[in-house]
Length: 316
Image (cartoon, rainbow, N blue to C red; front, side, top):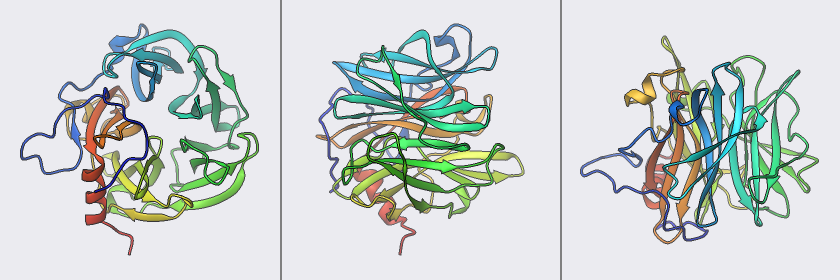
């Protein structure tokens, strides 16, 4: 049996797997959990991230407003399902990720510059006061995701270099830093492989430490005659050298199926951005953007997902 390395967080959202459901990831029956109606002047709320905080949870949320500007705001919740979102915009940009390292909370997001998108980095201890650090990449990049601990005394960031358009580059890389200021020592991690992800891939939630290695949920994109379809896949990375992929599923774990995933500002999108875990039970709650319009929630366990990855492994 696989084991999550981390804290017991018994109050994460949870629903049991539906009877006779054959797949390793299942949806919350109350989806979507956050919609445009939860913030005045919102066009859409999606691709957002959450962490345990105090006796509840905190998060950073992508809100595209009615002027179609990209905003990031904070929010708080007791149960990680019903959220109170701040009216204050903390940064401009989109697709935030969030993790805790040594008692501080680090935000990475797609930062907007005149030269193109970079990966912004900011840190807080209370979700009220933020310190913005140097950008972690030069233009153009997306999907910057920090590991939740130093590895060999270095911070590690997953990132997908891209271009100003909608991405002829589709590979995930790792870059490293001693101080969150100077970045280098780049390593290739993985490229699109299977048909469901053939156009591009990008890191999703903060990697989850397990006794098998780092569990990485990621999105993959298929291009068809109907445009892009975003789905969620998973891989296991080496614990000490996470640019080495140990196991990787040949098929998606969750893809657009429900109406809120197939109909919206960008149809046919499942875009994972955050995961809450309980080490004692092995439960995992995954937050994802649905059709670039709302936030939805899905569930799995560490055993379910690791067993699936290994049963469908493309790494020989």
